[in-house]
Image (cartoon, rainbow, N blue to C red; front, side, top):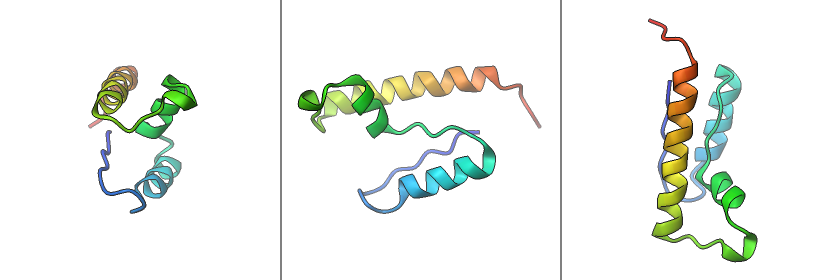
Length: 73
């Protein structure tokens, strides 16, 4: 299962994601966490380029995780 959240900063996306993850024992893939893992603090910029890089890696990570989970009906 994938739950995708989008919204303005400060609207509770991360809080809701953490609660859903707690209830379902699922992972949370956060664009901000990917950004901080990929770029040095002085390189971080909230640009389209960095957003695209982080989103692509998040999609690849989600695909990998989904492939590891047996299908359930």
